[in-house]
Amino acid sequence: MTHADPPSPGLPPTPGAGVRVVSVPHGGPYVDAVLPAGVVRVGDPGGASAWLERAHLAARATEVDVVHLHAGAGHPGPAEPEAWAEELQRLGIPLVVTVHQLRDAGPADHDALLAAVLATAEVVLTLTVGAADEIAERYGRTAIVVAHPSLAVPDPELGAERGLVGVRVGPASGAVPDPVGMVRAALSGALSGGGRLRVLVDAAAAPALDPGIVALADAGELEVVRYGAGEWAGQLQQLHVAVLPERCGTHSPDVEICRDVGTRVVAPSCGWFADQWSDVVPYTNDERAGLDPVSLAAAIGAALTRPMPRPADRGWREEQRTAVREVHGEVYAQVLADRSWA
Image (cartoon, rainbow, N blue to C red; front, side, top):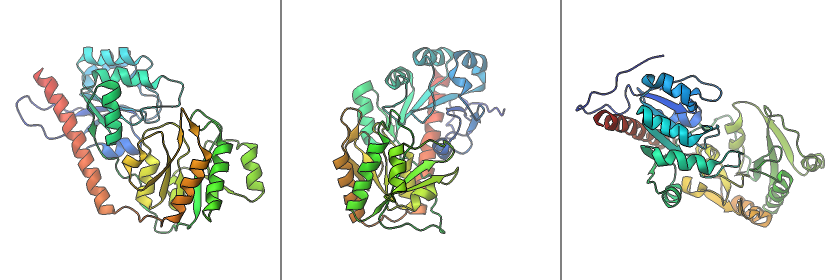
C-alpha cells in the first residue's frame, strides 16, 4: 500500500494530491469518475469494505487521511452507523459523505444511517439542488452540490430505434413490488404512443421472470432481451425512451448514461431525477402512493412524441468531470488542513 505525507501546516495544499482516501465503496463507475488525480486510494476492491468495521479503523488509522462514504451507492453501510461515526471522530479521521439516495428500499434503516453520518461529517456532498434542500430540511446540514459526471460514451456502431421503450425488470422487490403491473403500464404507454416495449433483464442475475411477463412475450406483445456485463449502456443507447421503474430513490446513474448516449428518460416522482437532467418526463411512483399506471402510460406517450435527444457534448462532459474532481480534491485538502490545525 502506498503512503503519502499530509500537507505541511501553513502551506497551501495542492488540491487532493497525496491525500490518502478510503472510499466506501472502494470503487465503481461514480467513485472512479470523481476521484481526483494524485489522490492515494486506500483499501482493497471487492466485497464489503473492512473500513466499515470499528476494529479495522482503530488498527489502521495511521494509514488514512480521509474516509469518504458514498451513502446509498448500492452497498451496505456500517452495521452500527452512530458508533462507527463516533469512532472516526475519536481517531481524528475526517469523514466526507456524498448522499446518493435519501431513501432506500433495502432492509437496513437508511434514515438512521444518514442521521448518524451527517451529524458528524466534516463535509456533505450531494448531486442536485433538490436533494440539498431536502438534506437541509431533514438533517440540518448544508450540502455542496456537485454534478453527476459522465458515465458512458456512445457506441458509434449502435443506432437507436424510434418508438422503442425499454424497462429493466427482475423479481418483485421493495423497489419494484409489482413488476407485472409496471410492465403492463409501460406496454400501454408504448403502444398508445405508436411504439413497442422491450423488457431488459440482467443475465448475470438470471432472474426468473414473472409468468405474466413471459406470457406477454410469448404472445408477441413485447420483447425480452437479456444483457451481459458491460452491455448496459449499449442497451440504453438503442432506446427512444428508458423507464426508471423504482418507487424509491433520489438520483440515478441511468439518467446520466441516457444523457451521455442520447436516450429520453421517464422517471418516477420519488426523487430528484429532473434536477439531474432537465430532459426527463416524470410519472407518479413513490413509496406512499405507489405506481399510478395511467400516469406512467401518459408519460411514455408524451416522451415518444418528443424527438430523441442528442448525445451529450463530449467536450462539455469532460470539462464537467474535471471540475467535479477538482471540487473533491479541494474538499479532501481542506478537511485535512483543518485537522492539521486542530
